[in-house]
Image (tube, rainbow, N blue to C red; front, side):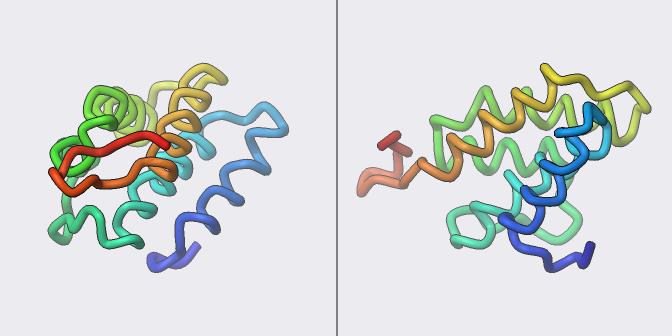
Amino acid sequence: MERGARAAQRRATATRPAGRGEWDTPTVRRFRAFARGPTDRGTVDPPPGATARAFARSAGETLPILGIPAAEGAAVFDDVRYLGRAGTAESYDLLVRLDETAVRARVSSDAAAVAP
């Protein structure tokens, strides 16, 4: 997949292997879809090379509703991607919920994210 792939493309490439019960690749791809979404919308502007945990902190600052779930998602991403731990249906589902929450979250006028 190209580095510039949009969030929807990343979601699609995560869904296929997850449907076959393969969890490692979909877990990594779904976190990347989550991270790409707010970046595509201009809500979060991470510096080049930002780690998953740094992105999660930034997302939580901009969209507080994502704070704890984003930190949990970043930990899952790091565990699977860098520590070689196996992805699971539960870890993938956590990232799906995080991504879906991020898609619905909006920044209000007082800079606090609100759910629809």
